[in-house]
Length: 103
Image 1 (cartoon, rainbow, N blue to C red):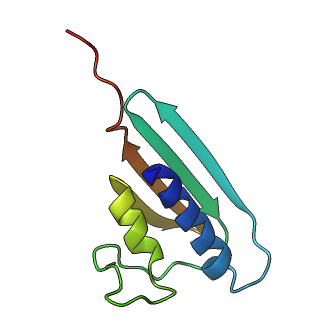
Image 2: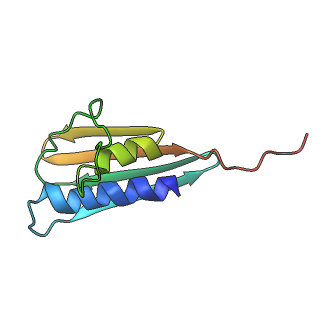
Image 3: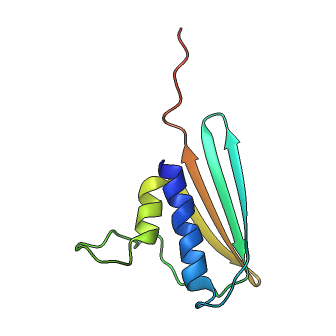
């Protein structure tokens, strides 16, 4: 469930912030491997002005400002970079819920 939360939050942030309310297209690649889930987003929206190290959950019950903090809490790794005109977001979630093999 945590992986889904992280993916949903980045998708929502892209739709809400990257195009300032205008239509936007983004590309999402999903990977599922033994032990790890991954998602990569690419879009041509405006540059994200984010400091991932400073993202924190709001102290009150605010309706906004939860997104990146939720992603960071749900993911094992979140990376953002801008290459030319393209935003790249990468989410990695280790599959801690995998059943252990009997020895």
